[in-house]
Image: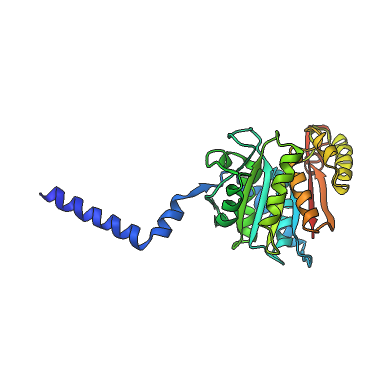
Length: 286
């Protein structure tokens, strides 16, 4: 009898919790951890940016950043500039490094737990993209890919009130696939939305070789040369589709003013041009 009494009491308590705090309980349950966080690199980059006393008066509609966290100071620099005209939503697009999932373009409805707090997903925009069958929700694949998840701490640190739409793109995306996705991104974009391609550039080459590859890639980007971008391999960049979605959307939104903020590689950063390197761009569109 006593067991039944305590069981019923416990049941009542649970019901009250879910009735009084349903939203809180649901939000806490629907969270992924941002597992890619390198504390030393993050705070070193943040310190460099603060010491540079950056100001920026342009309203950034789009951009390209690295996701290799060795280049944390480049990522911090980009997001610091966004703080002067902070967007309500960031659409962050990156490569599906491991080609997981059963669709070419994947997203997540969950929020992201970072060392600085929770980054909320923009469920309204995500639902619109899912409804037209251009994205599939995949809560298994996204948490394991650093191309977008590694950026979450930067967003929360610099833009604490900004929501996100995370998109992973397969290397199997065609130019037509990219065009369809770009057309839909235009419909969910406004003056309070910033679209970012999280992409690393030349891979596995020495620094001097990487610099030469970057020159070619930058010319293709400047000329919106999509066939040229799709012809490139990892010697040049790790996601032509992510860059192309960004460029097509900037074209359609008439946000084609471009500024290259930074271009370097890990050989330069580590002062060793004899080793294999990864190269990085930071570019803004406005």
